[in-house]
Image (tube, rainbow, N blue to C red):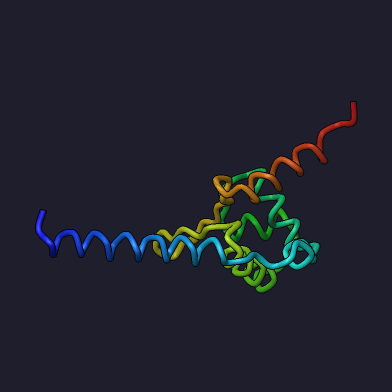
Length: 117
């Protein structure tokens, strides 16, 4: 293996480690900020139960307006609990169940909403 190839691999590995460290240091806002809005919790709960919805369906199901829904969805995307997929003019919002915190919230909702035994 040539010296330049070793150097390139070393730099690539250092960049990868740096990116991972930055990602791990990124903090989520406090839980009271994420769940501090009734509308935001309704949106999260609805998405956790349905997995994917358009904003129109989300608005109907949560009985909120477009501006509030969009504001909260933007925040939830920024926090990493929701992902937006675009298909032309149609936007689908997806609950990121692969995220540990999102999965934990979905499980909490499932437990909370189930009948008491």
